[in-house]
Amino acid sequence: MDYGMLGPVESSRSEPDINQARTTADDRVKRRRRRRFFLLALAALLFLSASATLAGVLVRSRGHGRNGSQLNSGPTQAISQTCGLTRYPALCVSSLANFPGALDAGERELVHISLNMTRQRVSASLYGASSIAGVTMDRLARSAYDDCVELLDDSVDQLSRSLEAVSPKAADGADDEDVLTWLSAALTNQDTCAEGLDGVADGYVRRQMTNYLKDLEELVSNSLAIFAASRRSQDFSGIPIENRRRRRRSLLSSGNVDDGFPDWVNPTDRKLLQTPAKSIQADYVVAKDGSGTHKTIADAVKAAPEGSSRRIIIYVKAGRYDENIKVARKKTNIMFVGDGMGKTVVAGSRSVYDKLTTFHTATFAATGAGFIMKEMTIENSAGPEKHQAVALRIGADRAVVYHCSIIGYQDTLYVHSLRQFYRECDVYGTVDFIFGNAAVVIQNAIFGRGGRWRTRRTPLRRRTARIPTRTRGFLSTIAGFKLQATSRQWRVASRRF
Image 1 (tube, rainbow, N blue to C red):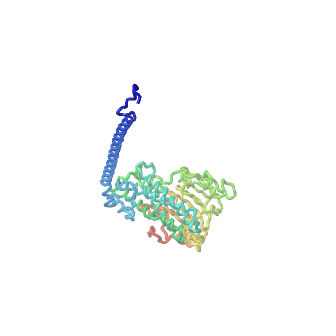
Image 2: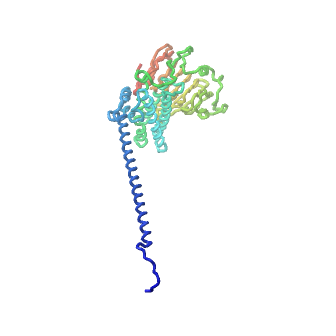
Image 3: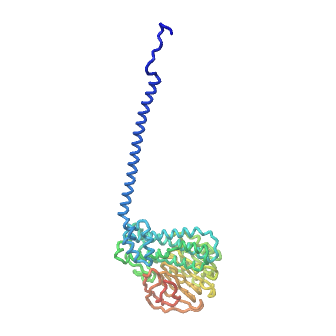
């Protein structure tokens, strides 16, 4: 050991020990902070969970207070009373009870809801039916399928117009009779579609279409019944139909002009109906010799605009046109003018013998609103051995046929649906040669029974008759017409007078 030299003084706590102590203290602070943060987070989580549980209880409690009793006890009183007026009350209750807003609706709102629900169901059926268009089908199945797609499409349009008419913001122009007519036509469409499918052999197409069409006829029937009741029942007196015209529309004139035409034939069209063909300025001229704008009637129809609000005139010069013509729903306000009965002739020969539906056999078919035909002959020459063979089929609203001859054997004139008027027409046939479900008046007619060469003039005396139609409301005085046994009583809507 060296004396006289001082060594380093040893502390009781070294530097590393001091640092370690500082670190330990910091760790304790951090742990306390983490613990406090964890406790705060846990408290917040428990609070949120409790709040959500309480909110759920409140929502369920309020829902039970508003709708729970209805769900447990069945339909509301409004639905029960409304559906009690229909032909299919059980379906009415189940369909309305499951439709949004119906359980909170009163009777007046259920009219609109019923139409909306039915329109949606028909639209869905049309969409489903369209999805199998590419499936291979035999000729009869294809005919029935095409009919159904067309009829479903027309029904969607008719239901849409009806729905718009009963809306509180309805546009001016539609009244109660319009809605009844459109709904009756939609009901007829479902019946016609189902009838066509009846003849199709059981298979994929028939099964699929039957599934798509399930309950449609019943739903349309219920909507029609509910709306019709809303016009009669005090319970429905408040139905929101704006701008309705209070005066009753008749199939025959009730105004100052007593010329026998319906009210819906405007003065311009009345004048056109009584003007010679050669004096009418036509939009299109059909002539087989090429002297017109078109050589075929079908080409002229194709050239005509869709959705026209003005009168479109197609003049068809004398000649025999071997064509099957279709004036579709979108071809509105078209007037066909010929050179006279027996001079301008449209001829076809389709029949059910050719594996077609009756609906599909028509030589001339028109569904565009405002359709007019004058001075023409429409013929189906299929003959009695080929059974149903339609010459003229009309499902156009406010259609007029003036001074025309319609020639066939069985099912000559198919007055399918909506409002129609015939004057001074010759109709020839043997069995069921005037049939359909339209609201129709025929004036001053000549009917040929037992073939087109045997005629019998009907007595020119005034009669009053109720015209067969599901609208069940048109009562008209018919001048120069006597009801004849032009067909047998057949199917649900037929009746004897």
